[in-house]
Image (cartoon, rainbow, N blue to C red):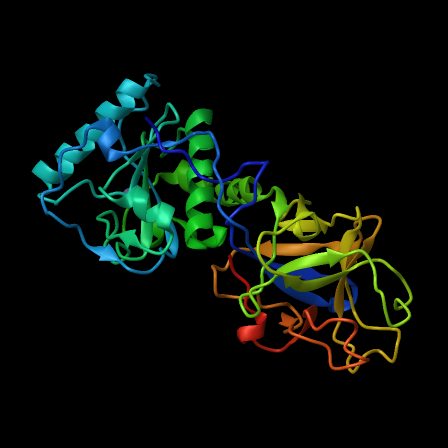
Length: 377
Ligand SMILES: [Zn+2]
């Protein structure tokens, strides 16, 4: 059996952690971190050590790092670029690597965390890597790059990529695996690196190394999907796009406002469609069919007590105010905006009349990241 990636379903919410920075006209810029619960996807799946019949590790317990991985390191195995794309071949490769690492190198187990074959099969390398990945809060110490074995997930890609390119199937499975790893550990796609970035080696080959920018973009796109949620870590509430104001005076519109107010399971008002615009620019469309704008300030009433900027689901089309730059920074890091402002999930109003609730409102106002500026799953 294979273990499915519990992500990327169009029908369910996602556990992805991401920070979005809004870049709008006039240099206005803000950020949000998005997250939602994990869910299941049907493919491509990872063939676990038990599934491919790995030998037991030499040690009864392999070292565990009790914090999330912060990088992905891409390798190539330098094996011949086979045209045997079968599952049986993939399992044979995993066994061959394990034998070499244990018997040849004297290591306790396979060095890398995952192996990705030219047939598009992903196999667990070192025992425990897959469970740790599903957990998302720990990783198994690897043996794939000196100095990076306690903070980086190593992915060995079958083949020699000095000049050849991976097969499409291998590329696709690599993208899916990286997307899941980024999501589970809160790794930025910018932290998908080549082995050579940290060690004197040709690995992963000039050709595959030159494809890493494309890999980052493809992984980013793989994470891009509908059913996005925002949750404040401070008040533990999901952000709702409310259709309109009820008071005072409904402001000048009824466009809908973003608030961090809904506890429990997010519903339709808390679910956004994230629309990729290329180059990591995205827009968010709310339940009312409007796009989320980051407005620079209030115009009434009395501009509240500030003009920090407010998020609203109001625009009929995607203009510069509705474009966000999406970055992945991990669960507890907010995005540093170009104008030095961060989005705060403020708990309540102070005026006028605290509206009808004190649920909390999102504003682009903070100069630094504090508890109010942190969002997570
Ligand atoms: Zn390598």
